[in-house]
Image (cartoon, rainbow, N blue to C red; front, side):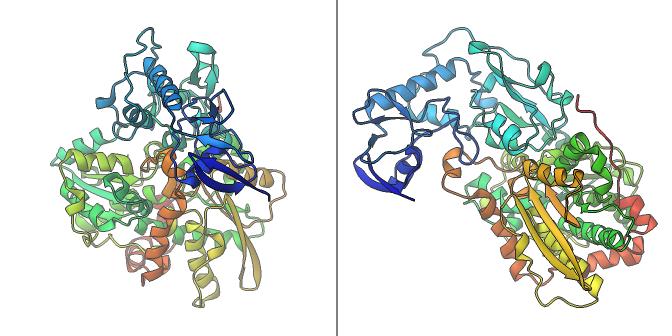
Length: 581
């Protein structure tokens, strides 16, 4: 590819032909602000905050969309440029409900940060403002168009990446707003609760439904034994909320914080992920050996994915594993085995989970999630909500003991369960167990690296007892759709498929810390967070689900064996066809 030479603020820089000014400026060491632009997602050129001057060009040009040319001289911070950016920001503020102190994004709002940086007068263009009703019709998400700046990042995430397509820009001019088809609320359209729209929103126009209030009520109820379980990827991202670099493992501090909040027991949902592997792996082997079984079998861990298939491919529901997700298995085990073991009435146990996902707030309300006659899970909060609780309770996160351990006896999971947090992790964990159970032999190498990485669709072939098994891993619902269309058309070559709703898996879940567009330009967030899980896996001793002593105890003392009648009652579920409109 041909290279292009140009100057950015007098600095010589060479970039490949076709490079945008924005990327050339970053390479030259200069920051250009953006609001509508986000790397690998959205390039609307609609906000015009990224305008720059080009020598011999009278017009200011958008750096996010203008391609470099040989000999071009770019100026990113002239008085003319800064004045234009400031006016653009002040115009946005003129139609923005400025409730910063009560907004969950205060301190992490891109509009707020840029307005402060450019010294904006929030009243410069006071006048008529739009006033919209807040859409809080779902169990998991709140949309407030009064804080929307029409960047359309959420639209790109929903339509292009996830192919869900339940929001878009409607109307024209001053009346333009992000809306669902036919003016419906998010509760009346086939939204799958993936939360990717929240992750890319630069303001507080989108946020998760509050779960903190319910958790605080449970903690205050002295008649309840309140148990909390944390998902694998929470420890890989929580530290970001307290100033730690992306990719910092804060497991011990996370556990210490949860204990300081007052939970009676702090357990690891990794254990339930191990149980998922035992149940799902056994189910897969049974299907593999049954010529009449529905194949390929598809994993069922991701709640957003389950909503997606129920809405869009109901004819393929028989392909899903019947296993509950690790969250729901965790709650079911707490209210059956744990309750019985400790002589506690299941009604007196409250189970809270900390998840990287907002879909888990919906999942706990699904039918067939009450193994003990009471809901498996009582409340679920996101990684972001846990961080807010820690801050609100005055806990100094950085001073907490990094070696604090989960409680016993159900606090220990294998690192096979831990890598569930990254795309491909469920498949790799399953292969570690399925291969050894099927062959009766110990694997020489349990690192199935072919299913690792952030590529949207990954595939591999393994051999079990002389039989070739084709597997696929997809993250992001746009990629899931491609695999589902193949199955629907009768063209799928796979036997076993893992699907995660969020691109990159749970490490990039809709409830994880929000990363601004400037940082996303420089850091591969999905890969960096996933590295936390793989580093822990590499150095751990317990790396296979079927070798977890807690799992062995659960089967020997309670379930008998995987896929037993009792296991099906407690650990498995059913699905429904959902009407799209």
